[in-house]
Amino acid sequence: MRMTDIAFGITEWDGIEPVRHSGDVGHAMWRTRTFGPEDNPVRVRIVDYSPGYEADHWCEKGHILFCLEGEMDTVLADGRAFKLKPGTSYQVADGAEPHRSSSAGGAKLFIVD
Image (cartoon, rainbow, N blue to C red):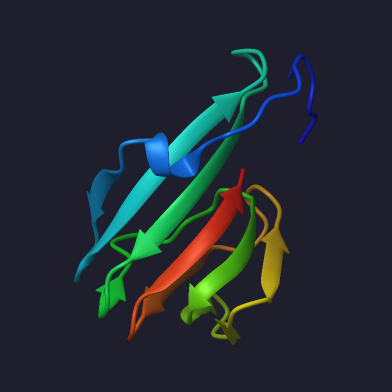
């Protein structure tokens, strides 16, 4: 990720209308901002996962995720499994390791990709 052409700014996350994204089970509510040029955008999100959420796809996008609240389980295509709890994060590169997430009790994450 190259962060270019981004002026200093402040984001009031509560003022950004959430957009619902359905999973196989449950849903995710995304509050999203995009920064930088069109050919190199940086997407920043606060994502709230409903209790029982299960992603509807294997993701191959690179991210940096930081868990703010709740717990998020992530399984990699090779079978390894990880749990994010408040104060923990993970990072993965684009196309590096397909991953799929779920949350039994719900979670809130800060995501940069």
